[in-house]
Image 1 (cartoon, rainbow, N blue to C red):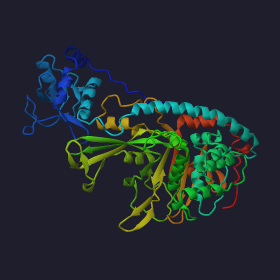
Image 2 (cartoon, rainbow, N blue to C red):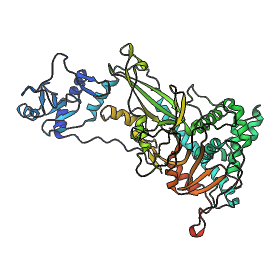
Image 3 (cartoon, rainbow, N blue to C red):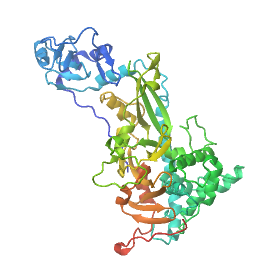
Image 4 (spheres, rainbow, N blue to C red):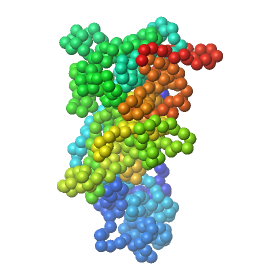
Length: 553
């Protein structure tokens, strides 16, 4: 089962801090708020008079750490802070002028107190407008998340019975659900995404438990072509136990009718196909549901499985005011961390990783995604506090994680100056188990405010942040003549889905591939799928390798 986020525990205060709070309560903390200022990067410090440089009251030095006494407001350096506390009884607690952190002059160390951190953090939000986009309704989303979990639990029971019946009819040594798809003419982009979605637990449970009934759909709708109906047909065929390669011709024709701009026999982008497919499912399945304009309340299976929420913080570099917006997403697009890449990383030839090559990591890409970005002079944004356009910093984070996390690696670069496109053949190292805790909004905001201990809006203690990879869509070759292949992970074994061919591969082959789309699912769903959905023998006696299933390509 998935582990919940570890709760934030408050360090025990020193006895001098406890004595201070016993004598003075929180009055000193509240008074100090008027003396705090926020830097453009979100840090807090004690405000200084513009015409004066703070100096130690004993040695008149101004270098190194300076501390502001909470009792008499005198300033001392790190060398004389203890002397000040000894000559003035009860003056043991001070505040670091540069960092606005509590300091015990007797213990000669930083001390932590949740009440002090709340006072500091509230200073940041004191002047913030109450109608910042996306703040309202966060707690309500947490309740909806719980209801979603209960609904998906019921789908497991129905899909388990259907798969168990079909599994007994299967004659292959491969696990159920591994069936090749015939290439209908440069349709490897479609086959690769479909193979990944076949093994996405929420999507599989939905269609195999007859949640979208084709007969009833045709009766209540006048549409001759329904993409969810055709998806339902494919799921039934793939999990029927038949191992001969399947031709998704009807699905392709239906998708062409709904996405006319992509209707051709030319090679298409797998990521564009994935987004287009989810959009069409939403258009059909979301008609009867009530949702707001950004689909945050949509109950269609596409958004139930893939919908997450991104947080964008734009901070004015002049006054430090932060504007926050929230945007729904069904995937996260990541730039490769090219700072660790060799200068020859951009090429039209496929390169194979070697032990001496410098590689990028998925964690590095996520760090780059959540790293503060300085917006250029031509991207100045209007600051509500300054009442004019200012230079600013932008930082992204993840407010709400989806059940199925799709990570899109940007491997295709388009140059408007050179008017050409090229592919980045950079090797990417990725983990099979992924912890998304460092990239949550709560973690990013706490780090921005100096790891202050305060309660974050909403309830994230019930959010599963641990994910397991179950499918990887890869791209090999050049931009104009490449090929898509999917590796799916079933009960910790990897299988290569190359159009009509299905073969078992070692995990080293998967790690060496050029990842383009990576599909992770919450750990609880991954292991529940492995436990509940019965499979046939995974390998024959003697450890013999599997034979590929051949078909038309």
